[in-house]
Each structure stands twice: as structure tokens, then as C-alpha cells.
Length: 431
Ligand code: PMP
Image 1: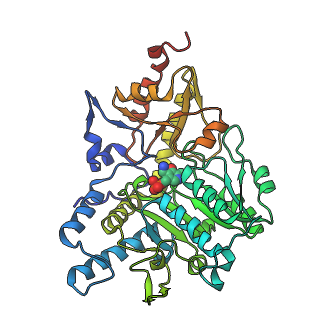
Image 2: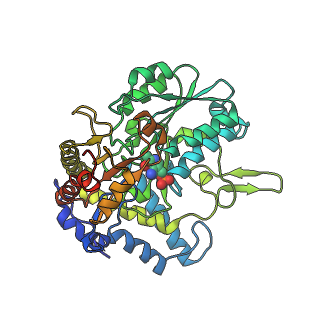
Image 3: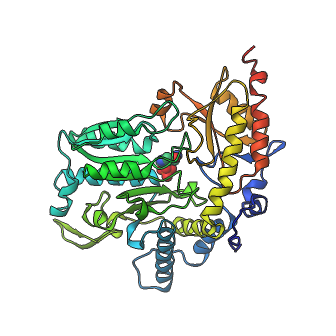
């Protein structure tokens, strides 16, 4: 098994790249330049090894069975929970495994829907919605943090409202103060936009929500891989993050909750492993986190995600953030200097961002840009990035997105910029 790299103040992506076997891949005649980490990040060998090692030496059902393997699997699974919870400064009981951030957000929406039907008893009444109650999101949501709330509103008669963004992509805090009010029961928002890379003002939004007595839900998918994340310090009630974006496996995500909120929230999925007693008529549920983990869990993926956060921890999230800030500046400055390129969310300097930039090339469709880059071995994301309302707000249907991770080098960014500077000439745009 490869060991995690030693912690250092700065991060050397050239050395790290050796930990990521896929980065040696060639695309046709070109070496791979992977700039699609915001969609799915690559995994270091230690993550792959952790999953394989579990599958080859300890695989069995957790939390049941009296045999040695079951005990070993349970211990590894719960150790993984403690590691991933620790990564976001939470206690193990505050971390629920899900199959991803989408599953976590649906869990909350359906649990609140169940509370609105009277499920969960007296404790859950605080979540119950009625006609006229309001749910608030932002205009910059990923669909995963929008559609579950649309559905919840439709099921309960609540009204879904949104906070607008400025032309530069930053959240309009005056609009937020106007939208969040005494009818607001929940405010859901992204820590970092997956299109703009802007780190949103969590403290301000949480303060507005708290003043209104509303529950806060943070989508931390695009922050957890890139900056130190202390969820209790952010003072949000609930949060989700996604394993495959933070050097971990697919089909695993974290759902975090304040202890008193999780205690009171009724379950969404029900079935095996989340109960104390079951009769033919009714069931009594376990406390969190097990109450929210019905059925067989993604055990090897949880162990892989723990290896991923150990890898990130060994690098040091401050060093990760510093490295990615350098890349972010080079990426955005470079794109700004290419004629015919419009950067989305080109907010003034001084705004914290992650190393991600989405842009439009005047006269060339995003998909053509993507194919042009792919022919040079450069992987980017094209389309609406599951954020149609934000693209509509910015007057577009699609954009090109380049996004970095710990293993991204300055040379990757420069190669990408060099290729992008030739796109318009290649397609005869702007003649
Ligand atoms: N929110 C954001 C901001 C995202 O970028 C993504 C992934 N594209 C999701 C939610 C959904 O995450 P998952 O793939 O874990 O369901």
C-alpha cells in the first residue's frame, strides 16, 4: 500500500502526480491533461489500495454477524466514519453515509416531508412545513440542491423562493435579506458554486437564516476537496459533500448534521439496520447516524473515502488551498487575456475562489470547444454543469469549465490556455 505524502507547507504537484496512476494515461497521441476534477477527481493509489485491501481481506456485512470478518469490517467502517467526520471537524455520530451529495439532499427533503406528514413525533414538529411556509435557495444552485426543494414545496404547499446573484456571480446579500424572513423555514445554498468557483458568504447567510429561525443546509461538494472545512464552525445545521470529488470513490458521500437536528429528524429510507424493535405494525428507530442508514451500506467506498481524507490531511488543507489559489489566478488571468472569451462570475479580486473557471467562447459552441481540447488530450466539462438557472441568468445555455485539484500543475494550466487561445481561429470565429 502506498503511504500518504508527508505534510508540508507547500505542495508539489509534480511529485504527487506519481500517486495518481491514471495521470500517466495518454489520450490518442497526447498526455492526459485532466481539468475536470470538479466533476470527478482522480484517486491516489492509496485510495484504490484501501478499497482493494478491504475487499481482499475483510469484506463482509457490517453491524451484524458474530464472525471475525464481520467484526473487522465493522471496525474499519466505523474507523472510516471517524476519519471522514474528523476531516470536517465533526463527531462520528454527526456523519451519515449516503451514496453521494444528491442522496444526502434528497434525504433531508424527504425527511422534512415526512415530518410534515406528522412522522417523527413531537421532536420532529419543528421541521413540519405547511402551506405558506417558505424554502429559500440561491440562483446558483446545482440541480441537486434545487429539485429536491421544488419537490418538497410541491408536496407540502410550501413556497420555494430564491436569492438572486449579481452579474458578477456573487450572491446578492441585499436580496437575501429581503427574501429571508419570518416565513422562511429553510435556507439551502452552495458553499462554492460549481460553475463560478466563488466561495459564498456562509456567515452572512447563516446569520440571516438564524435570525428568521430557519434551518440551514450547506452544499459543500465543491469546497470540501479544496479548502479547510470546519462544519461546526460554519454553524450550519446540515451539510453534504461528495466522495468522488475529494479523491475518493464513487457512490459515497457525507451527510453532516448538528447533533440536535439529526436527533429530531425522522428517517427517509427505512428498512434493515436502522431499527431497534420491529413488530408487524410498527418500528422503533435507532439514533443517528444509523437511523439514516437503511440497508446495506457502501462499505468499501467509505473505507476508500477515509483513505482520501487521510491523503488530503497529510498534504494539509492549507497547502492544498494555497496551491489551488495559485492555479486559480493563473487560470483566470490567462483566460481573461484570450480575446473573445467571457469568464462567468468574473467578480472583483478579493473574492475567495477555488481553482475552477467556466467560460464562453464567442462564436464557438461549448461542445465544439470541448472536442477541440479533447483532441489535444485536455479534459474539461462542457454543458450547463447541472446549473441551468444560473446559465440562464448569465444569458447562456452552456459553458466550458476547467477545474483543478491537488495534482494539477502550472504546466497543465498553461497547456490548456495555449490550446484555448487557438480555438476561435480554428473554428473561424470572429472573422
Ligand atoms: N452539488 C454540487 C455543487 C455539485 O458539484 C455536485 C456534483 N456535480 C452535486 C451537488 C452532486 O453530487 P453527487 O455527485 O455526490 O450526487
